[in-house]
Amino acid sequence: MMIDSRTALLAGGALHLLWAAFHLAFPRLFRWNTALVSLDRVNQGILRVLNLCLAFQFLVLGWLSLAFTDELFATPLGRALCAGLAGFWLLRLGLQCSHFRALDPRSLVLSAFFAATCAAYAAPLFL
Image (tube, rainbow, N blue to C red; front, top):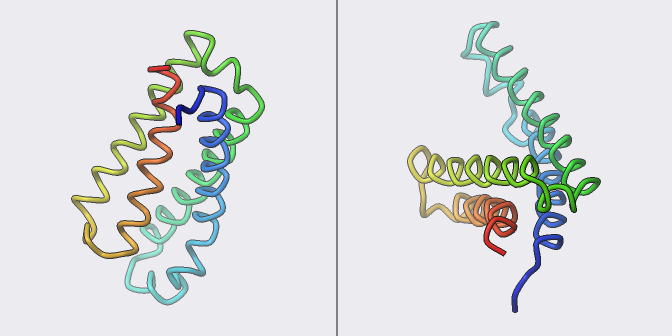
């Protein structure tokens, strides 16, 4: 079964919204109130601010993918953005393998979602 560019980008938009929700849940999921105590105030702040900025960026990317789907696969700027996003998620997949236990079941699930998000943005470049 072949997927078309529009469907791939809609899936990518939905995945970005899920990534945003996942990142917004990090403080609770990873118990940052206790886990980050060993870090100084500056490093705690950096981690929290970067996470919130990344969640916001994922919300924007989700919105762009859902609201401007046709422009993303039909214009040079849109295709360049798709290439950049595919590259980002491919990099994230590689970093998962090099910085976390690759065969841990949680890591495998995350890796599958990284690969799916990468594929959602790479697909329009090849279809």
